[in-house]
Image (tube, rainbow, N blue to C red):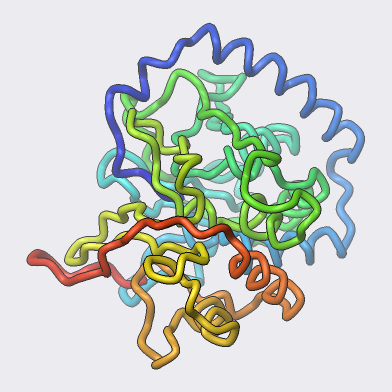
Length: 322
């Protein structure tokens, strides 16, 4: 859900032929996954797991819920319409409404949107279109198939259908192919570390706390700066960049205590009770086990010396409610 300020024509110069080859390979893999797990049959355990992921860890609801007068309108969860680029790009309706949501999508189509960045299926685009990489599918591609199917189960059976016609994307914002998917084994940490999975696959820590490469692709994370912060968030009235989460003692959080990291994660506050800059959320609903794994992983990230300017108020209209 981030990196969207880097909209440049460079995004559209990616080779269409390469995208076609990429899509053919991904289709073969994804057909096997959905075929093996089945379609339309969901257990309560799947729905509950999907609720936890979409609401507490992956935070799908925060991007796909529209704003009301005082903040996100929780009476319209997943109804879409939140503008990321005013008049150009809004998040889609993920409720099971058949007309304005994803009620007529197949499980395979939803799976492909989450993990490959192909969505917006309609009569004009029966094979779907590439999603703009505000949606971090390039990271969610590393989620287990079971977790992806759990999110689908929750969206199908745990979310109320809401009629909300979201404006179509401006044509120039449609990329010729999806962003390159993150290679999980190349990311910091051991592949079997649950903290790595929670921060770099199912959770969005790495996505927010890593700067993008130059060139216009909002899905292209800088591999030299994983978790080192500095990604800019264009919030009206504020100058905000994500914090350096590495263990560097001067520019990162190497001198933070375990309790301070837990407080930041759970409450969105520093040790003095001062709220952290938006859009840092409060992960209040995470299990103690997941918090423990995330904190252990973050506190052991290799140090990267990357100074990040603290957030500051700037002239202009007040920021929207968070």
